[in-house]
Length: 185
Image 1 (cartoon, rainbow, N blue to C red):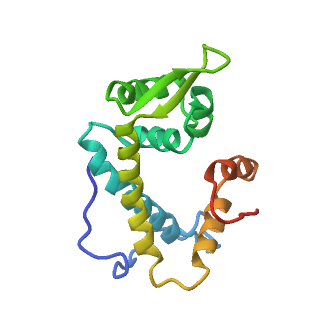
Image 2 (tube, rainbow, N blue to C red):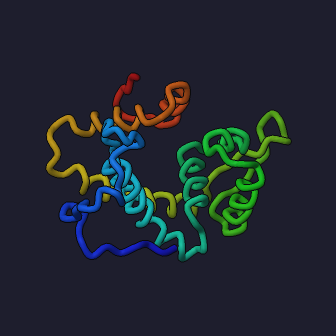
């Protein structure tokens, strides 16, 4: 995966050419669109996923593998059908990624306790270790980002991220997140 390298920092980048960076879809000079927030979110996501990407590349895995590993680690015994709902991907896409993780000894599949047709997913010992390593990389990045922010910023960030999720999906997401704080819409 290739990233573009910038010679100027985000803070010193100037937007002198207004035609190259339109302020809004309204030619009448309407409300300015939050391009800076959108772009900062892209760059933050790139960095947040970039640290684990380097580790995953050693296994010839990508971000899809990371997402599957993360949610299996956080939800031992999760059914494949539930994982499909969380990730919102096709059965075919999950099948390909899951097969690679199983073949590598990172995830194991077990039969359901009451229904042998169910496939329950668990991380193996090496899968657990990999999941913890990836999470610690992201934890360090989050800790660095929170340094110097005012007290209460963590809660504001949680609320902001929750507000980014479609309202009808928030309750289900909150069941999965298991945050140490009580988040309400």
